[in-house]
Length: 532
Image 1 (spheres, rainbow, N blue to C red):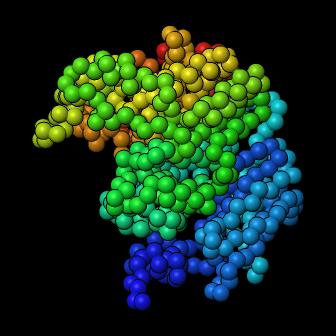
Image 2 (tube, rainbow, N blue to C red):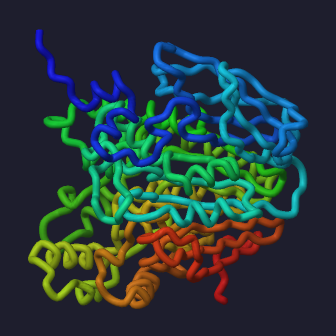
Image 3 (tube, rainbow, N blue to C red):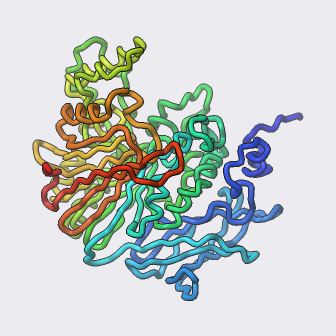
């Protein structure tokens, strides 16, 4: 029977590089090469262990291959102190992960992989977690890195730092959507939306070929969690806004494919959630709030017609059965907070979406473009009505799950925890003082995006005016920036925790210069930001 080969068949048979070269869209030579194609990365740090990652494609005819991982206390590898072996093959897209044990706490290591033919990978640097009392720990916070919207200058700036102990990516590491020809040189593969396993693998291969991202992976270990765009926009356990079963197949198949590619290409374990102990200074929690147990988010279709939103606010919106984490993870996090609140000074909650509630300013109708169409005007008016009713501007983050949010914050209060929530997703920078039952519950550093555009696309007016409007309309919001890209550096000390938002000069060109910064500090025991 005659069969026409499609793009995914060609990728499976001939490899990523051959297909990209034939299309004239070869983004970086490693995609078309054999050997170590995507350098190295480390993650899932512990005081005595580290997960190491690489990708190795052997010559034609090899079905699988065994790699040797080496770890040394010096960059010249004159003192190799640990290592292990790992097997890989086409069945996992030639990616390899291995956990090396027997390491010392709070120690810098250099690592590499060696192939059977003697080839050596590039060298990475990593650092194990500390034990006991320490005076300082520095963590980088990243999110929302859409390759088509610009250069990863934030990654490059962080990679060049000498004070980075660990970096946390809270989601949208890749984007599933089709190609946007926005910035010259920033083209993605495949050019269509990622749906099947071959698509997600190719998308990861494309992103992981970026030299600035590779440099950051080589510089320090990462902790990573997915948000929605690693699968499909506005995803939940049973579907996604950006998934159409009639034309894109079963949601469970797409979800499984995206999770498989993520776990192949990222330096992460298969554990859905985990706690990391930074000595007695802090505990960092990696959570999952998208694909495993999240209830479907409310949408405009769930809202009542007309201006009477009280019944919706007091009913479906506050439904206690609606969850972000699911009952199993909620119970795990509650136990961890109760225990770790007694043994570590700060509780750092890595979360994909904002926990602080943002409300649309009542004068936001005035921020529409002069040529706004009827749909945009109607949507803005509806948003203002929701704000008047005490509803959030988005139902896709924790603002759409108020009962679940209350349970989590009450758990932190019961544990007497100094809670610090670290989030992304919105593309904008936020500082929230969180409260529950009228009492301080912790603070949130909402990270701005690496490249993805923020509120400036929706509000074409002075960004300072927009930020001030949101702060005035949102009781928990202390500060905001809604128009600039970059990352956040979190400095943790025993008595204070400081977040420094770094704003890059540009994402349209390669330029790792910081144009501006903003710092916010919370003192231990205060659980809210104090006025400057």
